[in-house]
Amino acid sequence: MNSQSCVSIQKEWDIVAARQMGREIAKQLGFGTVDQARITTAISELARNIYLYAGEGQICFEIVETLEQKGMTIVATDSGPGIEDLSLVMQDGYTTSGGLGAGLPGVRRLMDDFDMESEVGHGTRIVTTKWVR
Image (tube, rainbow, N blue to C red):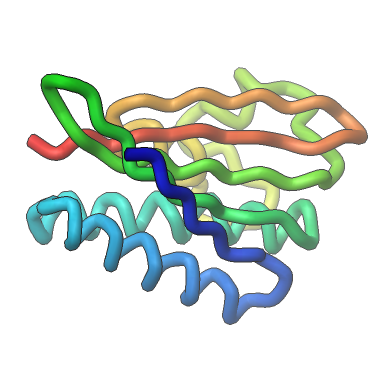
């Protein structure tokens, strides 16, 4: 079963909508409250990055199932300025917005799988998955 739901990120309020949709899907999949909070935090971070740096993009949720496990994949895409130095933004404490800098390294720690591709001038795509334990 592969169903996908997306939230368009264009204004600050869309971050809240993405969080709510993500938490609801996580709950339906059987994630515990701690993992629901981790997923919601990751969504906030990804959606806020789109809002702050790209202006617009989308957060999509996909339910993934294998024979052994099921989980939830979050795909954040934008066609913003892109990230010049991926290794730099993955360093703890790195921030360009004056935020806490938990940012993308935080998302990587909160989730089980994390993959990022970015092309300067074309945008960024981040795919991250959490598996039900």
